[in-house]
Image 1: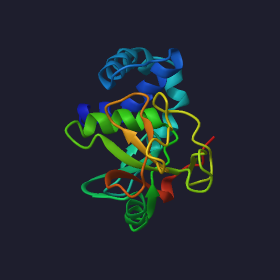
Image 2: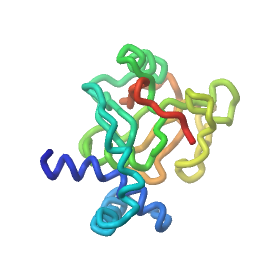
Image 3: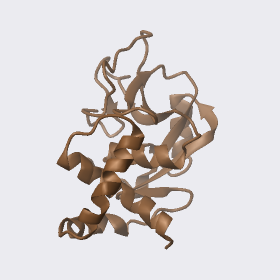
Length: 192
């Protein structure tokens, strides 16, 4: 495995370390710099053994791994939230419900620098207004941008991730077209 690919695979671990050591706020570039500083410390510590199992997940093409989950970012055609969900289901997946949102954000922001700035994820408040739940039924409890969700347009019921902002989650009108992230169901692990 070449070193840039291996660094990309280790990147989510670095973010976890950065977040565990201190609360980080700011741009994706700041996150990346701080996480990379922790790389040498982490690789030479006993903590790296604790997370070694996360490296053993294999993702079927065209999915790529982030931590122990497999994702696919679709940027070619922008779809409504419902259409995006149907597309993902046709790939033996569903809209993404990442256990490690910040790790996914970092990888997508790095991998798709000139790509879309907003992507659908697999959560909504369609069942109960104001209560965002992942498709699994779990509450969305963290990752919200300041003053979000705000239901600003009166019917912002679906969840989007901003790639250039941290925190990254916001509510958006479900009928609007956007890029989206699918997650492979066969690899999906339940939320803690």
